[in-house]
Image (cartoon, rainbow, N blue to C red; front, side, top):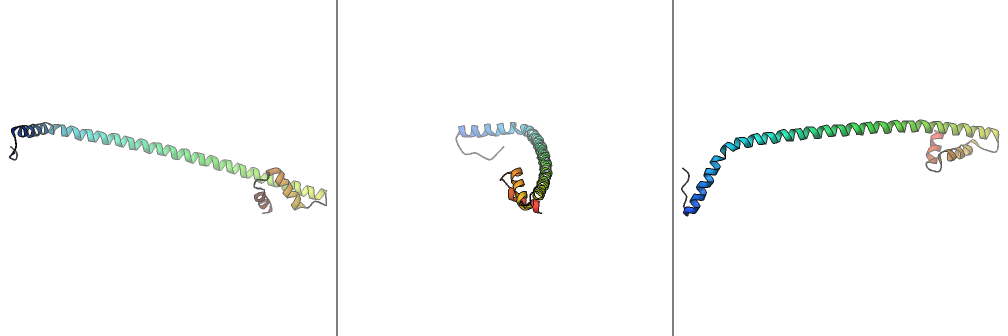
Length: 128
C-alpha cells in the first residue's frame, strides 16, 4: 500500500486512519471545486455590484458638478448685471454732480453692492 512505516503500533494505526480518511475525502474534493466555483460566482456578483455602485457614484458626482456649474454660471450672470448697474449709477452720479469723478463713484457703488469682500476683483472686472 504505502511506504513502510517504522514506529509503534499506535503510530501506525494513526497513519493508516489518516490515509483512509484522506481517501474518503477524495470525492469531497469535487465538491470543493463546486464550492470554489460558487465562491467565484459570489465574487463576480460582488465585483459587478461594486462596479454598479461606483458607476452610480460617478453619475451623482457628474450631476452635482453640472449643478454647481449651472449655479456658478447664474451667479456670474447676476454679478455682471450688478456691475453694469453699478457702472450706470456711477455714470449718472458723475453727470449730476461735477465734483464726483466716475471712478470714485464706481468704487463707492461697487463697495455698497458687493461689500468689502472681493471689492478689488469687482473693480478690476468693471475696468476690463
